[in-house]
Image (spheres, helix red, strand yellow):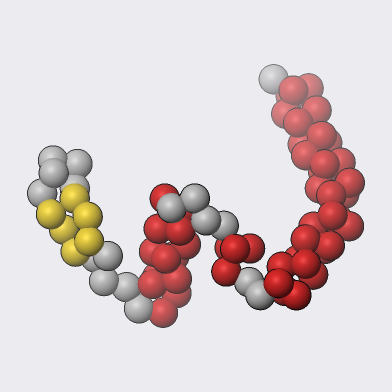
Amino acid sequence: MRGQDKDGTPIVVEGRGYFARCLQHETDHLHGRLYLDRLTHRERQSALREMAASQDEVFARRAARSSSAASSS
């Protein structure tokens, strides 16, 4: 990966394995892409169905954490 540090000096970062995947993931975000965009149509549809099925549970957990944090402050 090529870029610049905070002072504008060119840098190169190399990654292998998991770190390379992390670099690609963050680079994708800079280009407006999500992990779902890299999946095949069938895989994407399956992932979206799973997300929709767990949506209520996720929102309930968030609400519980939020109310717990508010009551402890």
